[in-house]
Image (cartoon, rainbow, N blue to C red; front, side):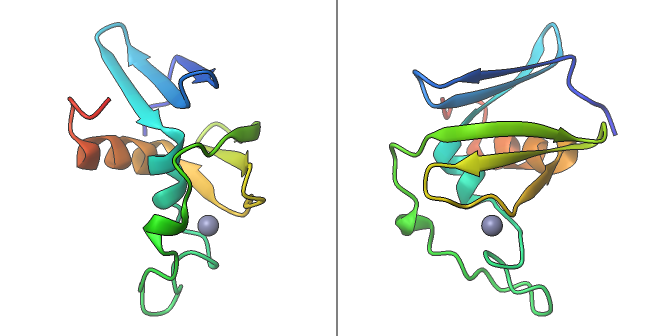
Length: 104
Ligand SMILES: [Zn+2]
């Protein structure tokens, strides 16, 4: 799994930017990252059913804190008081791919 060379949190634009390589950058709105959360509160761990209502995530969601977990994932503390999700690099890439390259 490739780690990003650089991670930028643009709180003014509410964008998480992951720089994999010079021409390979994933830009994710905070809201989309939060909606993709796969923690036990957001997704049923046995059935895989999504418990989180995506519409409940506010568009003006903010990130209060960001931390790295080892060299394979990152964690966020969101302004809606959610902080249990762990996002691996592959997962963040997937969220970006689902959004499409022109989403931001
Ligand atoms: Zn979650």
